[in-house]
Length: 469
Ligand SMILES: [Fe+2]
Ligand SMILES: [Fe+2]
Image (cartoon, rainbow, N blue to C red; front, side, top):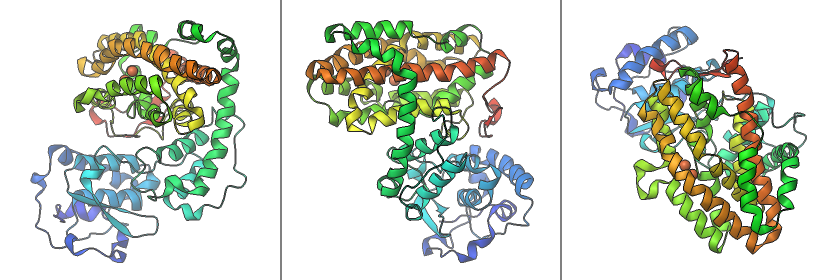
């Protein structure tokens, strides 16, 4: 299957240790593929890849040519062998996904290669990101090779779990094993007892942090009569303290600030609705029926083009951003990862199903009006309808979803078992509190003409975004 790239490019990129790799017969002696046969996107990307590799790694001196390798093979190989330590990991992975190969390979931590159908990679998988500290370094290694992780001993836990990007990325990595996982993860990593014990320690610290910031708003909701709970929850959403990111985007944000907002939100919205779906088999009766009705809408009412995750991906692409799942997880602040992590925390624990539904209720109830503002801001800075479409969709959809989530789902849950009212309240407040915590530093940065994450230029959306501090 290996077509051949023009020799100079292939010779420049391919790593030196390939003679150790046992190549399956199917990868040998394939017809040559001319550069002009490659898709336009790939042809353009070659140039930036060449420049980056030359500047970071140096011309072929640490690289050698494997005759017959294809562009996408080369890129993945470069990713694993050389580029990872130079920050090109995500960039190269993205490039590989813009090519149109049938098959490709990735190197594993044991030094061998494996063949992966490329079609299976497109838009559904990703490579492990760069660690962002001691904890995530341990977790990344453990996900590649769970056998290497000892049963959880003392972990280097930070004092403030909510604000620690290393802990938040570690949790995000461990949770992602239960969503789409990573191409270079051990396939059994999601149920590794050692990794689960690490996750347990991290999420206890995280949960304590969430409870601390939520406590004062939870108490009044617990004392409410069950029949009054939905109205009190709507009131809380209306009055919850914190800056309004949506209002700023509507009236004042510039084009790159709007793009940064999209970049931050990509961590959750590219898997929108998935965390709450974990609760479906854990509910019964009216709550279950209501949740399935809501999720059916989130997943496009049976139409692939209308899946909300994909609407968001289209918005990212139209804004010149990377729409690959998880692309920005290794650059966004801890507060953004926490927003995603809290949904996984509730979704993946059956005992927290009421918190998951409380979270969903607050999420939906705080969406419709802000989405109208976001859409207006997007059009004001000239990003256009294709970017705004995701938000347009949610103005109407979430006006329906909030009633469904607050009254039907949470109302039914509490009516069925009043003991769940506390956890519904905990989940709802956690949603609002973590959103407010993420908005505050972003707005503060914008007001001082700074970014928390510098979005890539619109004409080179595969360049890496970098933390701006
Ligand atoms: Fe949605
Ligand atoms: Fe919704």
